[in-house]
Image (cartoon, rainbow over all chains, first blue to last red; front, side):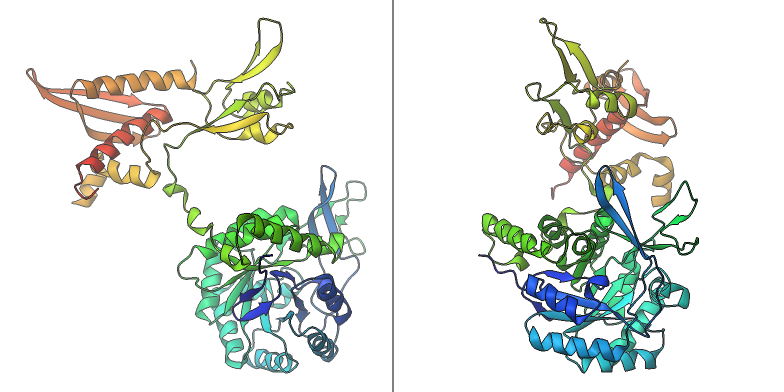
Length: 428
Length: 77
């Protein structure tokens, strides 16, 4: 059986699955139950000056029969006194010394306040700290969370203040509510972060009730934006992890967060550079026991690949992620319909005809049977037909032999510069 | 006419000029595609042809030829 242990910036845990700082890690009771279920670590629900919450707090966005495609919350950080949380952290760590407990922290952007909370939290034996620079609602209106996480100078300064006092590894959790997350990631690194984690939740309004005209959720008829997470955000999170992982100036470990619901998601994040993953929505939807399948699935995957340690897959796909300008323009795939499998639903034809390149013909064979056929010369290999096809194996995307050797857009532009008047002049 | 047919027609014109010994001397890309100027010096003196390429595949095709001609001329490659 493969070794699932990880070491993220010096924080060791028996497997790469940590519960993210959120409602599932609100108390010692919950975190201890999570560890019993098999979770490798937990990022304790954000500690700071205890807040007052509203009801309601959560809303889900369903899609096509899936109840929780996305999840929205307006809950704030812990509403319990620091002393109570610290006592439970101490007890939990004592009971589970080999599991990782990371304290998520949020205070005002003030050096003394950061020093104070870091010292008090480290005194009870946490394995690391995670600075919450990402919470997008409520706390941001008070100048904390995403409000400070959107300003690179504040990210750097606050990280530096924490590092002045911290003895344990410091993870900076970043907000996705920013144009380029590598900017704030670099600021965290400049400030001395030992690791970064991403993504926190995305600004969102889950919906509007078209009968009452209230927002979803609403609090006595009023709503406010919340933070969006769950499976729907995974591609956004995965890209942000990958962008940081391939940035040579961001040379610290990454804890991946965002829509991770199964072992496959975890593998994807780790291949794209995450040293471990954090999970929240899936646990809220299905309970702590989902980690059993996540552990088994990951273990089997590694065994089947002949990989002895999960740490060996970290970052293995990063070099395959680049800028559009570095993609080969002469690489070509086309769709091919397997008529033995095709059920003639015509969804591919409709999609191609209406919204793509009109290259799937509806034909009739000599026996009067209808069939679909791709005109490969006109197919641009967009994948749309295979995406909309409801039947597995009915459409394959086939690689064609390259008629021209590889050439990227950047290479093309470089060679054409020598043939363009304005660029020739500029080069003189 | 299908997109591929448009491309094949433009490709044929590009291939024909290269076949006849023309070389690309100037490229102007604009909103309407690419104007590619070809020249050759023959018995009749300097000859010039201009192709207005509209299809993406043809614009990719001629630039691929230029790119690989240049690569093959580079000793280090």
